[in-house]
Image (cartoon, rainbow, N blue to C red):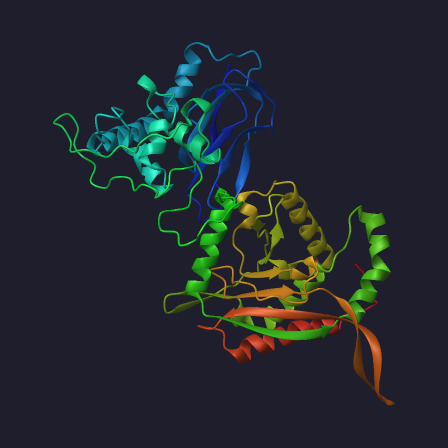
Length: 458
């Protein structure tokens, strides 16, 4: 029998660790090659970790909600189908290969717990809470009265990390046996057996229901109002949007483009392309091609800002904003988009869009973007003022394409004709992109779309 270690995979250049959300397999389960073993989450995306080899899951080295560094072993798998969790000495040998880094982490945790300042609860509580639980409670605005009512699965009924995370992720609902409101105990002066906590948990103003507004909220609740907790990804999006507005002074420019040639070209080729390739051709690859051409004409749009330095990007990696089934937003990236022809762009766009719809995007799929496109026209909107996707300096919004009467210049004079028109809007970082560069770049994108060759092949 032989074993191998399942390693926490590398998930992008800026990601050093991930949180285990859920184990999909239990110890002793048989696993096929490329079958997912667990779900992980980073600050970018949630994804599944498959095993490269089939076998039996012998041991989980971490629990759910544990944070694990990239490159660390997270499980031991036997590649012999008959192996079980109780396999003899070879399993011990395999486990010893990872015991050193695990032991180091355990020692660090033990030292942190020993040196941290636990809490002493007033006589009406008589319940011990670990520093980790207290820190989570404070960060998530869980009051002491809620902790007192929370059922614990730890030793002597203590509340564990898993208990409090289940409470938070479950909408802060207590079991029927614990729903009776209890008086909020105060943190008392410490006895000799336990030093005091220097920063006690802040209590909410109202404990009338499990879901209440933060104590600092200025919102007045009205009859029938409902409080909905943000999920983890929505919190990350919110923080990223606020950070972007605080980082970059946003300016938005607009142009209206006549894309009649582009629409006629797509109508001409879409049926044959779908029959030949088994998938649709959309306008998005055409927009990306026009953007990459314009970036080559104006490379100072493809930059990032680091303090007083401007980082000019060599690669042109285009992000395309997409909605997940949950309604949250994510931006998968087409790397080196300028090196792909229209066929390659179409394949890449469809592949990433399908992954987003099915929650199959990997962390690597959303890394390294240098410019972003968001299609507000997909929702029937004429135009938008998008927020820059940091650390980029510009983002393009493409509006819906509508038939409109337009004045056309001909050799016989001006005439009014029905044309396919759309608005393009560009938000850019005014620290490094002035109106001249931003406006000229946007106009160049429109020019490439208006000059589309109706006879080109795909």
